[in-house]
Amino acid sequence: TQLLEQSPQFLSIQEGENLTVYCNSSSVFSSLQWYRQEPGEGPVLLVTVVTGGEVKKLKRLTFQFGDARKDSSLHITAAQPGDTGLYLCAAQTGANNLFFGTGTRLTVIP
Amino acid sequence: DAGITQSPRHKVTETGTPVTLRCHQTENHRYMYWYRQDPGHGLRLIHYSYGVKDTDKGEVSDGYSVSRSKTEDFLLTLESATSSQTSVYFCAISESSTRGGTEAFFGQGTRLTVV
Image (tube, rainbow over all chains, first blue to last red; front, side, top):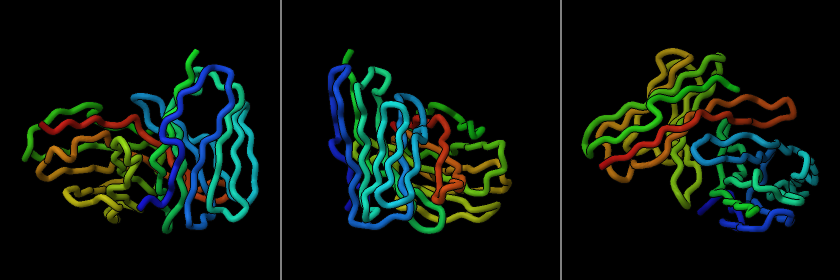
């Protein structure tokens, strides 16, 4: 059983389209992070959300933390080929451990 | 840049041989982690360390051991490599976010193939 379920697993869209990916759990978290990973590299932190209902924007990326702090979404507006990558959500479990979802692999076609 | 270096970056080894992967950090972080990444499984925690000689198991620790004799180095050892341990291994450090929570910073990974 996955603590963090991400959907969809794969997403292929045309440049300029909008998209939303989801990270869901039955557990409540004090914070949640989103990472992006490009081929051959380690994941890179995009954002941390800590408050239920919080919305954070990073240029064309909008992150939302659910009111109950069990889920999160990432919305990309006008996707660009540079957005291609694996998007991972992660939540803290235990004292200082991060548990990762299985990821959404996004391909933006020029 | 969290100053994390993994070595080697690529390795091919034979079943049954011991393998050690090294993670080196330059910024005196207390917490260090080893993850493996496999298709369909995302990143799974193998072991982590919360200080020199202080380590604990993650969710997929069987077949792996770790050591941390000094702050900057965290070693992952496969005592007797098996084909199921073919994977990409990532080392990470963590920092406490000023807004709360823990944020991870990763090395570039080691691609290990066991033949």
